[in-house]
Structure formats: C-alpha cells, structure tokens
Image (cartoon, rainbow, N blue to C red; front, side, top):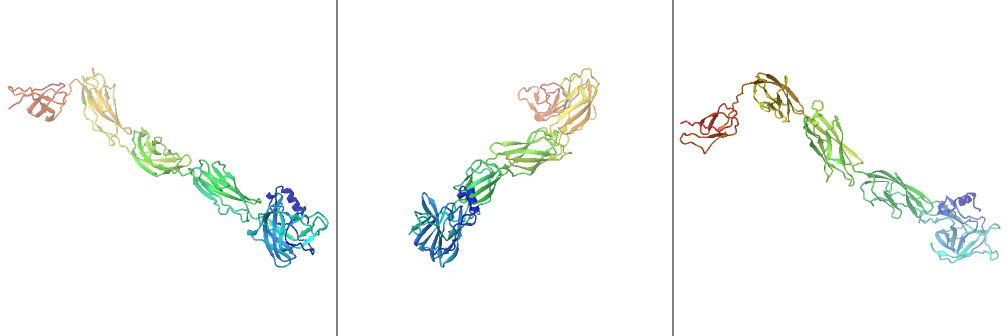
Length: 552
C-alpha cells in the first residue's frame, strides 16, 4: 500500500516531525492474500523500508494494533527508534493471539506507546512467527531487518541484520500483517490550578502568587509550561518553569492582572490556563468619623476642633487627610498633620472665622473629610454646630448730664462705660459727638478728655456710645457731657483697714496721732472718730498726711 496523498502533503508540511501532531490514522498494512510462508521462531523483525510503509510520520500515541495471525501465541508489537546508528526499543505491547486470522487490539491509555516521526514498526514472536506475510513482486525494495533471540527491553538498543527470505534474492520484499493506529494523544490539563488569587500591594518580593499544577494522561508525556501574557503588562512578576511557581519580583501596583499560561506536551498538544489576580490596596480607615462639635459663631482665634483617628494596613502607604468640601462653602476650616511620628491629622478652625460664621444663615456646617493613600480615598462627615452669639449689654447711662471740669487735662477720665458680654467676648468701643468732639474712648470703655477744653465752658456734648464684640455691634447709647468751670466733687468711702495708724510720731502732750490714708491719692480733709475707725468726707486732689484730733 502506497502512502496516501494526504500523508505525502503532511510530510512536506512537517519539516520537524516531532512538532506535527498525529491525526487518527494507520501505519503499515495487512497484505492480502497472505503467502503460505513461515519465518522462523524467537525472531524479532524491524520493518524498515524506503517506502516508509511501516514508518511513523507524526507525533502521537498508538491506540490500537491490528494483525492477521498465521499462528497463535504471544506477539510483542514494538516501536523502534534510530539512535546513533543503532536501534532503541521505545515501547511494546504484548498481544496474546488465541486464534488465527484478523485480530484488533485496543490499547488502554496507560499502555499506549508515545511515538515520534521516523519511528519504525517492528514485532517479536517468542515462538513461531505469528503474523501472516506476503512477498511483494517488483516495485521498490523492502529492507526488512531481523534479530534472533533478542532480549531487548524498553530503552535498550539492538543491532539488526538484513533479512533474506529465500537465500537467493539478496533484497527481501516481504510485507508483514501488522498495522498500528496512531492518534494525537491527550492535551495537558490545568484542572487543579487555581484561577483566582488576591494579594496585597505591600507583599514582599518573592511572594508566591501561584503554584501551577499540570497533568497529562498520556503515559510518559513531557509537558512544558510557559507564561504567555500578563495583562496589563508588568515586570513585577516572574514565572519559573522548573519550580512551576509564579512569584513577585518587585514592588507591586494595585489593580487587576490577568496571567495566561500555556502547557505544551512533546507532540504540540496545548492547554491554556488563566489566573485573575487582584493586587489589593488596603484603603485608609477612619475610625472616629462621623462626628461633630459645637463652636460659638463669634470664634476669632485658631483652634483645634478634632483629631482624626486614621490607619492603613498597607505598610508602604503614606496617608494624607484633607477637607474635600464644606456645606455651605466656608474657607475657615482646614486639616493639619499634628504628629510626625504617626499619621495623626486634626481639624482646625482658622482665626477670624467669626467674620464668615453666621448662626442665622447656617446654624451647622458639614465638613466632607477625606483621607487618601494616593490610591484610594475614603471620606466621612464632620459636623460643626454653631452656638448663637449674644450681643454685649451697655449698663444704664445717667439720665442727666455729667459735669466735666473745664480745667481737666488731656487723658483725664470723665466717665467709664459699664458693659457686660454673655460670652465674655473682648469688646471694642467707639463714640461720636455733635460738633468737634473733645473726647475719645479707650479700649477699656473709659471716656477721656481729648485735647484742651479751654473756651468750652457751658458747652454740652451729646455723646453716642457703640460697643462691638466681633459679631454684634450695640448702640448708640447716649450720654450728655457738660463742660463747666466748677470742679466736680467726688465722694469715696473706704474701710478702716485701709488706714494705718503710725506707730511713731505720736504727740503724748496733745494726744494727737498721725495717720496715713493708704491707697487714696486725692485727700483734702478728714475727721477721725476713733483709732481704727475713719470717716472720709469730701477731699480734693491732694496727697498728704493728716493729723486728726482725738477726743475723750
């Protein structure tokens, strides 16, 4: 039987036969009708010929043997391979022939022989030569080789001689009835290899990502595994085809990666496997938000409102916290890092925030507070509730005019404005007058002479007083200041504890004693009722010792 046109085309396309997979086809032939010829006992034949009738032309496995038996007995169907000028026994199947005639033997998977291109069919009969044969007339020669009494086992090499059937013709043309069926074999399998995995982006170099497990049901098949693609491309991973392990080789970026592995057996059968890897970035965790606090709408100084408790399980991440937005929009809130040893951040209220805070229009403010590791941001809410600020109160002013002595000099206090504030806010004062005002007000609320009062005798000034606590402006509250030529009297009362009797300077003859009025700078006269008791009357701008008279 000549090789088919399909086989010839297959041979031409497969320059390297080992890379060409077998389709399901037969090799050899069953010649009909057979000759009535015996071929000896305990003889091994190697059916090597230049027509390649018994030569394998592809890579695969023998799944079946067919023979036409002349005798019964054991038949060892064999595959031989030329190695360095000798022939090596690649595999054999022991077929028990219990009856003559045509026989087909299916070979179990575990017993199938792996074949490659250029392997040659042979057989061994321990007794009489089992297969029928037929001597071919004319045509190309068949160089049948043989060996008597061969004891070769699988893997052994053997030397053969040319087989001359009739000892007359020097070239044998015998065809034997043995024909194997070859097929492509089975593809490798990744059946037990995981398809998904998750690792963190701070995984150290050398972290095991995947152990690849590949099997091939074909006996003795060798499988090579390669990493075909990584999507998206990354140099942070490496696959070792010997250990079959995928490991990290550098710092990781977080995200999803897909790895495609290809397993190829010695005949070119392939299988692919996909691993979906998630490189997880543990996001920052804010432990104490949402939260909130209350502040006065008249807050004027920078103050720390709240410390954020934030952590990140990724060892390589740096955390930054910030206010993404405020509702309503106010620029007076911000976040500052308050510890360099840890990622501690605090929410602050800026100075002079009172100019933007208004309880009536926005009694609460939401701060959308976020922390990020430059990969993922997490946000939560911090709510600032405003406390309404109450205006300052100016105590009742006198209903009648306050006399101001025309001789008062610059800076002389003429009246002190008494003011209270419910929140104890710092206050500023302002006054206005009719005409050119000869008065000013101090930061403490004292109305002072501002310049000379000369020539203003008998002039009344209507003074309007204003008080501002940073949020509320109170006023005007009005007072009349009247300039006169009469120096106004002042009455002051003190206790006896403020007068200290002098222990020296006592006049025993006149029974008089000298006393000092302590803490009083304006004294003119006084009368002593008794030692330790002092009644002060009207006094003027003099600072002196007084010598009281002591009665019985």
